[in-house]
Every structure is written in C-alpha cells, then in structure tokens.
Image 1 (cartoon, rainbow, N blue to C red):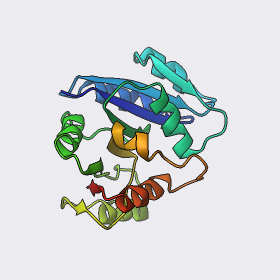
Image 2: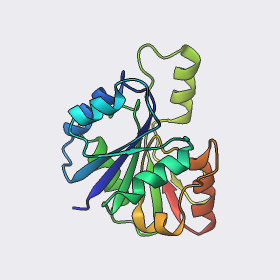
Image 3: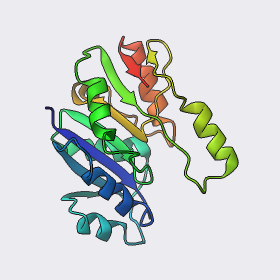
Length: 189
C-alpha cells in the first residue's frame, strides 16, 4: 500500500477546511499524511488545521497555484501526491482508495482526477458546468491534456520530472496536463 501525501491548498477556508479534513479522516484508506498549504489566511483556517491534527502546515506569502502545490510536495513523503482544494469535500469513504486504485498499477499514467459534484446551494450555472465537465463516464486521455487538480492524484516520480508551473496564475493543472501528454504519459478521469 503506497503512502499518499494529501496536499490541501487554501486561503480563508474556515467554512470548509474542517469538514474536508474530517471527511479525509473517515476514509477507508489510512496510509496518508496531510499537508496544508495556507496563503496567509486571515480567518481560523490554520487553527482548524491544527485542531484537526494536521502536522505539516506550510505558509506562503504570494499565492500561485502551482507554487503552492510544489511547496507542499517539498515537505511531503508519499509516493503518490493527492491534491485537494480545501473546499472540495470528499464525497464518500472510498474517495482516496478509488484515486489510489486508479493510479497504482499503471506506469504510463501521470495522474488521475476525479468528479466534482455541485453542492445544494451551488449557483445553477456553476452546478450545470460541474455536471457537464465532470460526467459519469471514465476516460483514458492519451491526447487530451485536460487535467483538474482540485481532486486529483499524481505520481511523485512524474512530478520529479514535470512539476507544476510556479509562475502561472491559473490553469497550472492544464499546463501540467499538456506537458505530461507531450512526454507520452496518460491521464485518467
């Protein structure tokens, strides 16, 4: 069973972080560590992370999404890196084991990303977009570089070769997806 480092990025996520951390603790897959990368939150996000037992907390001053992920990776120990946005609450107790199972025995696979469901209070347009973007079918992507890292797992060995762009202000996940596809790897949704 590989060790998984779950990297959670956030800023002022006190409404979601505790819920997300408790959902992680309820997972049936237990070989993990949690790293919270905080962008100078002005709320109680860091205190919540500490109260929920997060031992590795990284603080960054200038938030760039790829930089935040890479800073979390620097202090991580896992063979697999799970990237989770603080407001992306795992849907069930098999969330982590499903991500690990999807990536574990497939050497030409760079990463896997999972479905995101709208919440009951999501704006209708946002709910529609999530349901369209994250459909019900599984997809193996050999040419399509789309990757969404708000709910994903990637191999450390791939990240050692192709890290997330630290200067991109957004779409760092899609930039990474383009690079791994160009290098001959696959992505699974």
